[in-house]
Image (tube, rainbow, N blue to C red; front, side):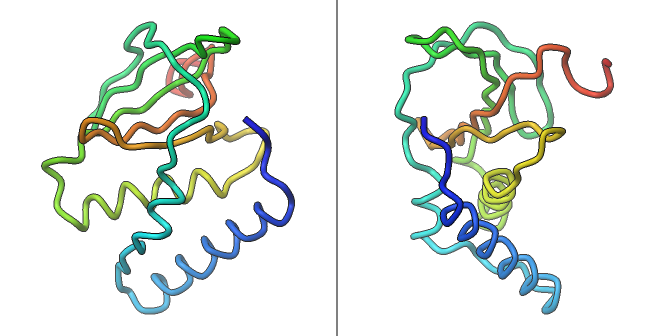
Length: 135
């Protein structure tokens, strides 16, 4: 998967800034447009294999996965979306949008996201040592 170019990263940051500034200023919870949602939820250009469950929370399950070709390890958060209300679905898309726009060495890197079988799958960097609660 290729890294985002500077202009693509800048465009994502602009989208994030305008979205969250509008939300903060109005106190509203604006919906993410269908076109933005489609951009966020493109099918990854890799094939992954689930290795094991590594966490479970109120909204979903996290799996350790492996790129079938390169054997590189990732984490995949799987969130069932079928029974979520529209505002709850929108909140999950905001999470993806936020993760996609962040780039910092101390923050887990976003890789891809897609919907399959009514589940939102968010693929991200795998932290070998676990979460901060276990370090």
